[in-house]
Length: 171
Image 1: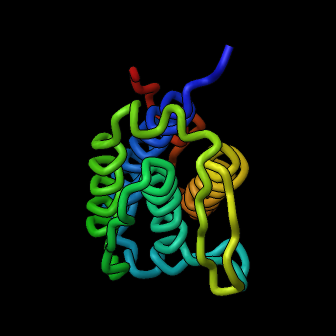
Image 2: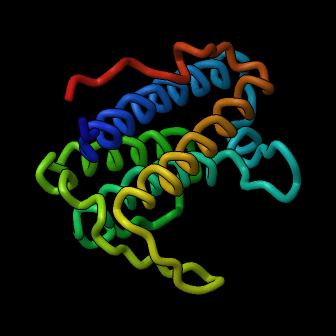
């Protein structure tokens, strides 16, 4: 039995982006209740050579959107990358979810073997649709989502695994 490229991508992206959206709400409420500096949280990092919190959230959104767009053969959406507040990050997550929702199953299914070329600063890399999704995009998506969650949890925001995972999305 084959696995649908759509079912192993869009609903998962939506579930975890929904979780991230709720985590952002809880973090903002925590910051406001404790009268903390929101900018401080936006710039937190796990380690100095890792992305700060706001870039982790941006990366979560970008991996979901770019995977869907590339596998579907669509143009990549362009975002400003100028988020400075939790409200800005929340809007970024909402835009990502809207884009993923716009993807139809027939745009992804059957594209497992399609060639996808991604240009990185270090050069081009060639993928099939399946390897891009399963071996690159999903692992990066989960990585950045986990790091964003860990930054907030380590900083005292009362969130748990259920918050991180979000609610399953019916496909």
